[in-house]
Length: 115
Length: 112
Image 1 (spheres, rainbow over the protein chains, first blue to last red):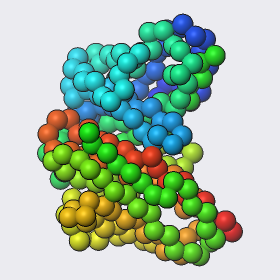
Image 2: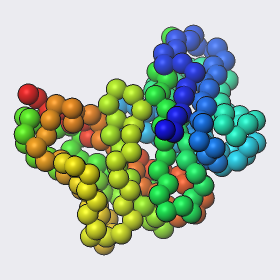
Image 3: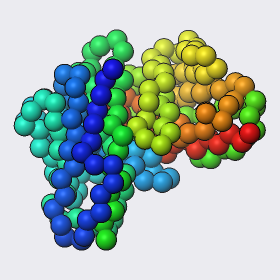
Image 4: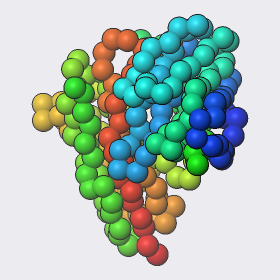
């Protein structure tokens, strides 16, 4: 079974803190993604990566950065957390496009609260 | 700008009812449309649709795509309380590293 794990299920941080969210997948997937999920807005893509050390901005990258030093691991960094970054953060992974059946597999999510 | 709109946003029905969830989209260079089910944690994959008019089926769930009218429906027959979840629709455009654009989701509640 494909497994995508995230370092924390729940996290509470203070405004201005630096926050690291970690994601690890065990399927040798090339693509990895970070989304945030807010009520009424669905999932919105923050950043994605299609290879080690490669990163691409998604639809809402402001206030976030990412790191992919190893193929299986993709980190989301909030340099200075703010209250409007309180959200559910979901990591996903998939094979490179071109395969016939190529869905994204999701981790369980990290619910981040910034006070 | 690529866009996916789901309706209704919320639906409450009784066990045994049949439900239809809708997903319309506007995307440049459409590649595929995906449906996911999200209970308390990770969204889990249901269907991927790439061709118009071909129904995908899995047990009581089925889905079909209309590429001319730019929409998809997800049907659930004989609903059960375990079908209660958020159902997510997403569209993939051609090119690039498989970026998905998601709709807002439909929250489905099945009452016993």
